[in-house]
Length: 146
Length: 83
Image (tube, rainbow over all chains, first blue to last red; front, side, top):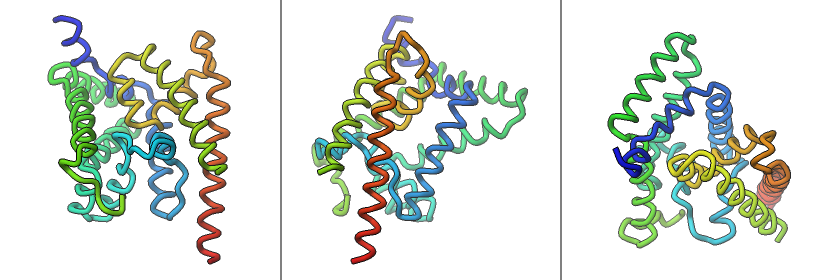
């Protein structure tokens, strides 16, 4: 396997899952951010967009995730198509946190094998960057109230 | 005005920590950090005592900028509700 292939199939998400403290912090912070945003209080705004005016690849994901949690699938996909991926990631994190140590290691190893075999995380990240470029080019326009 | 300055400070600190994240963890986690700066922020706090990274001051300044942003956001929302 050459270097570029190794990078593509590097376990990334599963490495996070292996670190219980990191997962607790990330899942907790994201849940707090989502909860506060649902209550109308923004505690985290994108500094890239605030300074440059250009949305970053993740801009709109909070709103899209909230729309999806409220059951508005069409609105959510229109705001940001990767909201289901965020929810899937969050579910994996919370499952990993909830499992007893032995089952957690098995769970971690399944996710790890998936990443190494199929390069899932690389595909998702590459897709997200591609989606961002396509939106910036205007081929898939940002929603009017974005 | 204060909000813009806070955002610029947060962005500069974020980019610095993001560069360290790229160098330490590789391309994939770097891109993850770029897409989700919240991840970069948490990664920064988890490695704040790593002397080789030298990110302690940047993380404190970044946190101050975030707290400032939250206070300004809440004040702006309260002012909007007050009419």
